[in-house]
Length: 268
Image (cartoon, rainbow, N blue to C red; front, side, top):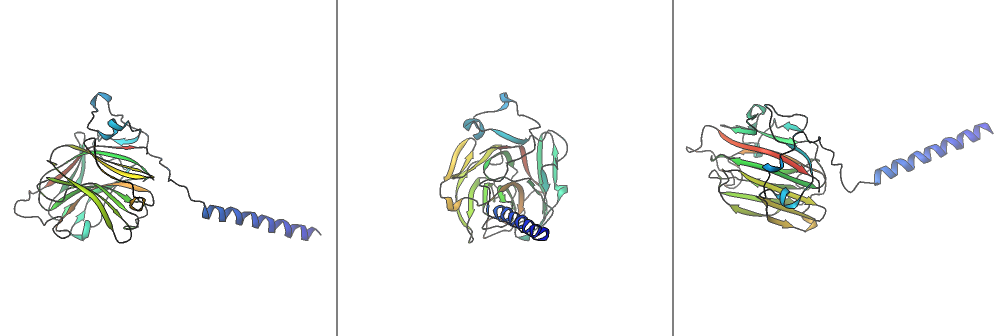
């Protein structure tokens, strides 16, 4: 009798465990945690202006990097160490530097740099103040990239992409679907000067902003990323694509710099 009761108790326990495991396996959260490093340097309010999308939209900041130190904060940043887009050159950590309140990515020859902010999150807003030195053969990019590394089905959102060396055209592009469909818009201007670039991602839309003004919006849910995304900052090397980033030529400076004044992350 004691043995029978023991067997019944074990079976009941196993059944309970199976219920827990199966429930955990089928219950997925609608949004990934947005845990970020606490704000370390709150931007002074009198230094903020209406050419920030965050100021116009009264966004709630959850993390930032003002680059006020003299080294990269590796608590949140992960430098790239592999090949650049299409394997033309290589990203190297030594091409990243912090000083004078800025992050600088320096490209030269077949070498450049890039880095990502970890962890990513499901939904949110990102705004970055940046400028890019003219130079044929180097293409700066600010983007959201899938944490799952499952491109193209995981999506991609480029909210700064300036492939041509004269820095006169910036592209905002949403990539989506297993065949890498694209939707976006281009703006003209002098992008060798400082501008504010922002992206807003919610459960029902993606919007892009340049200097606080909305330049793009899609509400097509098929175009929205299916999982958490993280911020990437990189400078790619040409040639890449069908004349997307041209190859360096005789006009290309010895070094080409992509500079970031600040990075600020906001809740959705």
